Length: 106
Image (cartoon, rainbow, N blue to C red; front, side, top):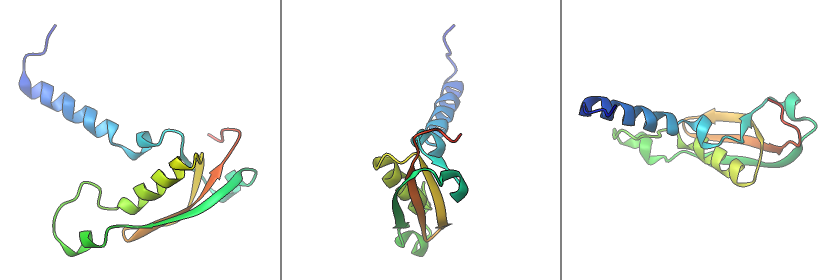
């Protein structure tokens, strides 16, 4: 049964894009944890990133306004961290400690 209604097709495509762009699914091997959960894990590094300050000056709408969080998660993922512990996460910037755990803590 083929869908011939273009409105339904556009809605389905939009839903697929939204679900694929969620942060949780961008970094499937990275989990947010608390300090007590990662005490037996290998500490990798403390990562801090700033959000683009120009975004706060203009009234232009951005897709990812708080990109400091995404930058931290991307860097942690690149160093093959399995867990991060947020130190701070604000619109102006974010910081987290990255850990690699042998056993899954989920």
